[in-house]
Image (cartoon, rainbow, N blue to C red):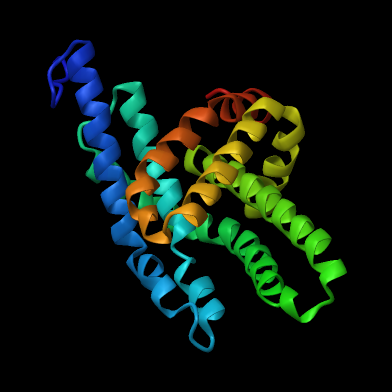
Amino acid sequence: MARTHEFGSGPLFTAAARIYGTAVCGFLLVAANLPLVLSPLFLSAPGGMLWLALTAIPVGPAVVAGASAYRRLLAGTSRSVSRDFLRALRSSAADATAVWLPFLGLLTMAGVNLLHLGDLSPQLQSPLRAGLVLFSVLVCTTAINALMIVSRFRFRTRDAVRLAFWCLGARKRASLAIAAVVVLSAWVLTQTTVFLLPFLSGPLVCVVTAISRPVLSLVEERFTVAA
């Protein structure tokens, strides 16, 4: 039986389906990370950075679920983006959390150090700030590679992390593109408001999912065996 399309067929219907799927994906990402969305309200309070780190734990599983759902949408095999998202969230939550937590720890450490740079001499602040920002971009890029790998394959946690680091050099263009997305997103949020993030989350996950296709193709070619 031929598969029915929610929006019909043809270029316009395909575009409408992808726009709708991106919007649904963004809504589900925000719903899964609602405490994180509200965390800027409490960031200046005592323990604000710890609260931010704790509320960011669901980011990994949510990104993996969003990437999995959007990949099915791009492939034309999705009947329901929300159903695909929830199914992927249930099946990959444990693996995604295990991969995401080490990167979240590194980002938290960098954030704490950035917040306390004012305690140092002015001569040290600029180079240390630049180093911490570059370190954070590298961590975010590697974390995205790892989460994209988890969204497609079932490797052990340490193997997924190793592959994510290996892909930085093996797929330089894709890694640089992801890093550029990270930097541009951070710049936009710092120049506007962090409360813009809920509206950007869906498109951002969709963009990095599309950018990561060469990374996943390489992993599939080198480290998987056809059934």
